[in-house]
Length: 251
Image: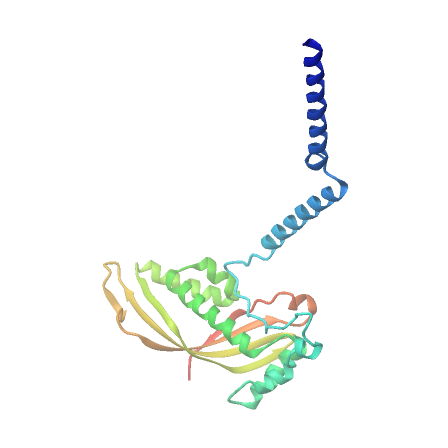
């Protein structure tokens, strides 16, 4: 009986050891290829995380969008490049041929310049600046304006605050935005845009009473603003941000 038991036990142990060895051969070992695959996966995850952090845009800076390009490998080279800057600018509608000449001067220094994309970005900047002025948000204005314009806006806000007044304003939208002048001087591009926008605006005193404007009425407002950017060198063009450098009264 004891001999039989020992034989059965021995056979069971042999079977169990064989099963463990087989299972470990399948699940318990990580080959060099496995290690390399895991490391490649971790590297890709780190790179994706770093790119996401580096590409996050600043909330206080307006970049005029560039024209879109088709960069897919299947696209022919000529089609991927799209129309030239000269073609884009000559096709852009203007009220005066001198404007086209000025836009072409900008494109000579910055071949990526596109007037339609610029106007789109300028419209976003216009809305942000108008809203920030009404709110008294000097921090946002400082990032979007030249020093001289910022000083003027800041002084107007301070004057309003000293009287205890509040500008109650709602930006409805831009009805029209046109480039009315363009030039390059000493490597600096300056583009003038006439905005026609819709605003609801009212100034309230300390008691909350409306003392100017109308809190219920939509009003058409015309502003002529000049945006500027250094395009004199490749390093300068690496900064795509335009700033508001002057405002003009409409004629």
